[in-house]
Amino acid sequence: MNGMRGLETRAILAIALLAGAGLLVVVFVLSRVGPAAPVIPTATALNVTPVPAGPATSASPTATMAPSMPAAAPTSAPTPTAQPTPVAIAARHTVTTGDTLWGIAVQYGLSLDALVAANPGINPDRIRPGDSINIPVGGRPPSAAPKATAAPDARVAPDAGNLRLRQTPSTSGRILTRLAANTPLTILARSINNTWLQVKTPDGAQGWVMARYVIVNIDLSKVKVAR
Image (tube, helix red, strand yellow):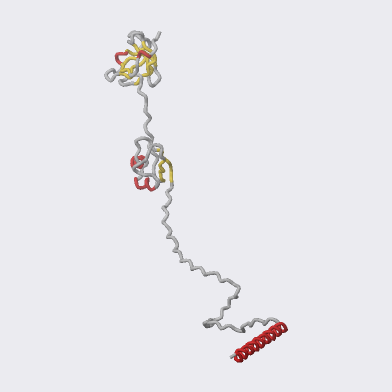
């Protein structure tokens, strides 16, 4: 038994010596050679799917192609509108109170259509005083309205024809002329009792007539009294 244990012990020592000697050899070799260089793989297999080559393009690889703009749709040319035929204007009429476009047309001898055509910006139903109305060529000038004449101061009564015009305010005064009925008279003066009136006729004759044969249109109290 003891002999077996001694044999095993020597075997273990021998193995330990051999192992220690091998470790020294390895250390020595490594110290002489240096650290082993890492192994660099020469190629790495990639799972790349080949892409078929397309047709070659002439564009430079550095050039950037601008996106093409869609072509503009052709625009149709505007249809020319018919321009109204210009109307020759002969005069202008200023609207006054009570005027109507129809009345103005009649006044100038025009048709209403012709007057409307000469005034495209005027509403025929809404003309106002102060508006200026174009009168086209072809209209006649409006007839001049008769001037309003002031009523005479007095006139010979219709039933007093052949009225005597005397030089003085008296039935004994000299007769200058005789006046027809309705002769207009201008009163120049009066007697103190308004019995006689000093008058002037349209032809310039002056004298006295009896007030009772005259139709007076003015206030005699405002007429001077002859002295």
